[in-house]
Image 1 (tube, helix red, strand yellow):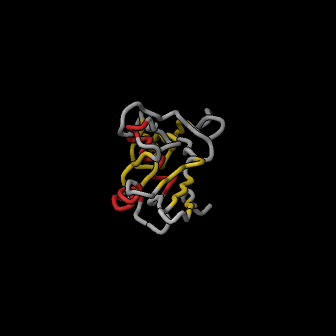
Image 2: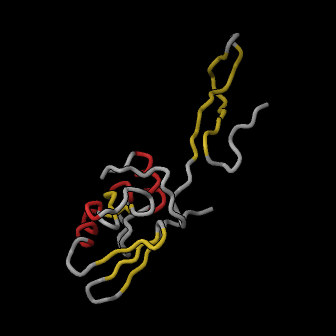
Length: 147
């Protein structure tokens, strides 16, 4: 029997699910699916899904959505799937389109970031530090999922 997936857990896995489909000679079989497991950019810079383009690819957008879970501004709980993929360091200023510089931000919070006096840094992927015009700092980390 072959192993269903790679060592370390990331990569392509084969998932077999009992089904009504008949295989080969008419014997009951199972449905086989390929499931791709990808590492979420968290704690260390991960440039595997980076692009030179302004817009991220679907996989990079998805991984950052899973990592952030919701808007990266403290107090905003818009679901990440309803947010903009936004560059912490603006793309036109040399900011990369990758998991280290990307964040999910609601349209309203995206505009706040671009307002005078507000700054945002991402000291680690998924950790967002916002500084208000008053000088007060707010930090929001990646989504914590139940084990």
